[in-house]
Image 1 (cartoon, rainbow over the protein chains, first blue to last red):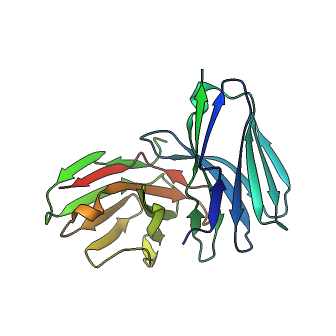
Image 2: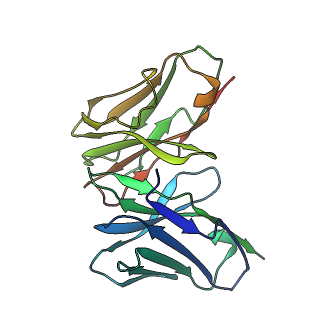
Length: 110
Length: 113
């Protein structure tokens, strides 16, 4: 079963707006990662946040982690058409494996 | 580095045929993962290797599936015999350390008729 669950399943926004998606997980983690997948392509790593970190930035991306609530959020600011993709959170589930959620599909309208 | 390389990119085959998917990980990465992605089940880990040794194959669905890594730069995932329910996109990924950043290949889109 999947450890992480993204919310919402789908998101449609206007270019220039911000997009926020959330990930909830069940068991304690060492780190949480976010990946992007463009249609027909492989997953691309965006950002990794460790369990002792609360917030991390990378360009227009901001990730937060609340271990007490077992949740994380990914914020994309000033969205562009190129941000149209599916976004997945991944958590380590022990035995050196990652578990990926079902993803949030983001559509950025021009 | 060219990244993780997978071949073929697309495969169409008939039920009962043998299918072999290939992967070349990023040089220096000790961990290699095979995933399967479907609409129904999302992204599933099938098997992973550390230093060419299979560590966990608990995600391999059936005995029809097998994976090998004869050396640090090559791995195969074989399905024999293939069935229509094996239709999916199969990804190979590699990483320097477990549970850290994984680098995915472009995937092989498999259709079993």
